Picture 1 (tube, helix red, strand yellow):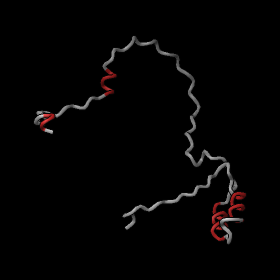
Picture 2 (spheres, rainbow, N blue to C red):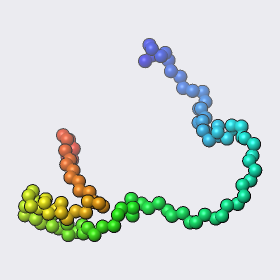
Picture 3 (cartoon, rainbow, N blue to C red):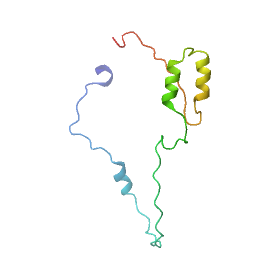
Picture 4 (cartoon, rainbow, N blue to C red):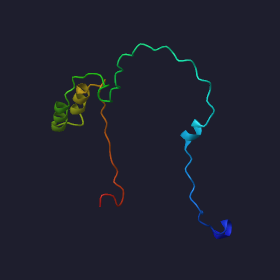
Length: 107
């Protein structure tokens, strides 16, 4: 490092952070436009719904689905066929995840 860059010295005083907002404020302003006439008060804006509330309504019963799937004797055959009939595909998704444990994990 010393051969390539030479001796490294600490800064005598710290640098001040550059504020982007302050740089924008210093830009020359355009001539002020005449004030606009007052507009009628807007109706109350609806708050955006969160992800769960934005889903379509469903009659899917998750508890009965889980109970059926866990307790079915043939989970690989007829259980899977019935499971696909029970799921409401418009509002739900069915995922299967597998986690690979690497050497040294969970020890």
